[in-house]
Amino acid sequence: MKNMKFLASTIIAATALSAMAAIPTESPNNYHAPIAIERQWRNYHPGKIDFKITTPEAEGAKIYSAIITDPETYITENARRVIQTLYFSPADSIPDINVIHYVVRDFDGISYKSGGGDNVRIDYSTNWIEKSFNDNDTIKLDYETRGVIYHELTHAFQLSPKGCGSYDGKSPYWSFIEGTADAVRVACGCFQQDFASKDRPRGGNWMSGYRTTGYFLYWLSLNKDKDFIRKFNRTALEVIPWSWDEAMYHILGRDEANSVANLWDEYMAAIGDENDKQKSTKK
Image (cartoon, rainbow, N blue to C red; front, side):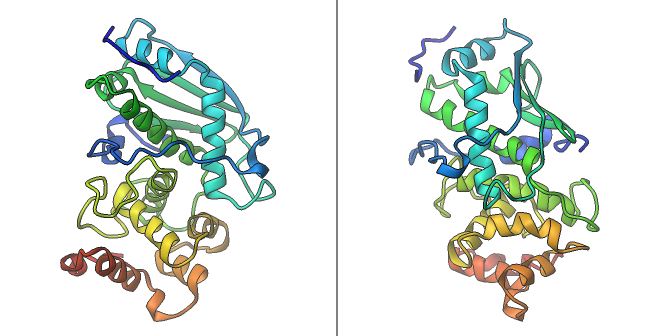
């Protein structure tokens, strides 16, 4: 083992490699400690945690075990952080999950969520854990491990929009699902919250999913409505059939300025990517 100084539905990501779009691209120089769990969520039960390491001989499994000594508590607390980012209160329409099966094992890729209903499963790659620790940087590994679990737990607890396609890598449904997951990851501090950061991809548009959409949603929460991510998640129940324009109008008001194309162009201008305006024509 390396010399370590440790700190004491159907498949959503259809393959583990699909999570590659969520890889952070720079070290967490502005490291964020885990966000505080709000009082109303401190006793919220997100489901029983069924944790397993199925390839304990893998180097990444040994690293994970040394860093995360109480995985059930770790997963439960991070689930609460995700849920409080997606919902206003425990009285909201939160998916009632009975069991979260969390499996650390040897496979190529990063992580993926599978299952649905009241039983979900999240797999996390020992190969990715080992790769994330290749600089013997425990802070970097903690940052990445929390970021990955924020993304996958969002898939477990987010709502699903209706009438807008399927999980096909290109539909409004897909961009909602993957964009929300990375918006939560940014909001929870496990992508850099500086829009000049290399963590934020340049170009694309609101349909690009993952970080491109996630940073856009996070910017809207900073500049249009502090509860934007919660309200955006809730549009899955309130806007049927769902569309980007109708979701924006539902949250911000029926004004042409609030069309998704105009909001994207405003976002591009605000963060200094005005040259990408012409890319915001796809709906």
